[in-house]
Length: 388
Ligand code: DNO
Image 1 (tube, rainbow, N blue to C red):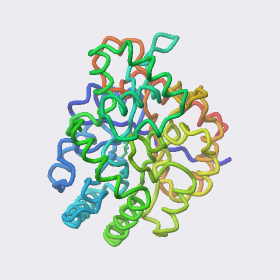
Image 2 (image 1 turned 30 degrees about the horizontal axis):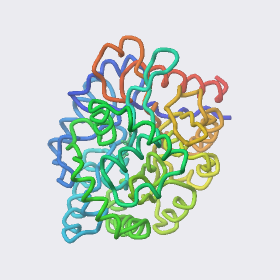
Image 3 (image 1 turned 180 degrees about the horizontal axis):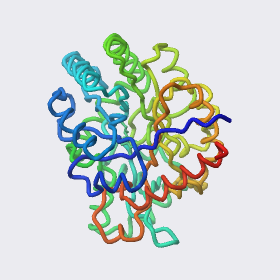
């Protein structure tokens, strides 16, 4: 195999991130993945703000490689009356980013909630802490806290029995933590409230998966000309977890979804963020086969691993030690990378809270040392495969 390396990236939430840009430098990453999280969803990102962030990154000797994310406003996902205004704003943000030299934009089309976990401090045997998703905890929240109508129909008997056991011992404090965990989003973006969630569940009940898919296709068609004019490549992130949850539809969870998105808008700007941890949480997903299908349009990758149990609960495992065969994934990504003019960016997605970080307040999944371990292992794997 020839020798072209991937671009090593690191997600940085901005100046308030407890992990500094000089920490990132020491971790050995060269590219930064960042977003202007303080700008409310749907508003235009002004050029001055983009340039300010870009300069901060460049002064540290790094490059702003990928925007993750320019959030898609709920009005667009639900195609409500004012959606077209938000599309115009979105296009302007893309133009502004391109004007500042940033051309890769990650986004997702998950209703209301971004990634969802039920426990943000799952104790690992080695003393570190991981993010965890447990169906019974989600069902408990759904049935007993949200009180969604007919929610119990969405869960297996095993899960429902576990809910009954859990509810007996659930303290008010446990309940609060569960609510906080499930509603937790991106740091410094607006928090979702229980009431927002209930309202949205109602709205999406009428839209359904078919409607949401059509809205995505509509969105992509609306922004297509702008993306092509200014050279922006969009990278949609898969649903995390890749299942319908809380009665909300999902449309980027498995291979057939990918085929639909590819075929519906068959233009090179319409690309993907290949996230191994998200897709790997569904044992029916064959990651290599999904990658084969979309490889020419993969503009960004999140390398993360998960370990699932028989019920489908999963925790985020060490990057090289989980159900995702990271060696094979890395191989195919590197093969594709050899054909590219621009190296494919990857970031070690999440990491355990470990060592000194256990004493610190960190952003769940985004503490420094766990990701540093992940990056170092992935870099070693990459070099091993490249034969250097
Ligand atoms: C979680 C991330 C997601 C991702 C967005 C992309 O850690 O992978 O929050 O950034 O879904 O839009």
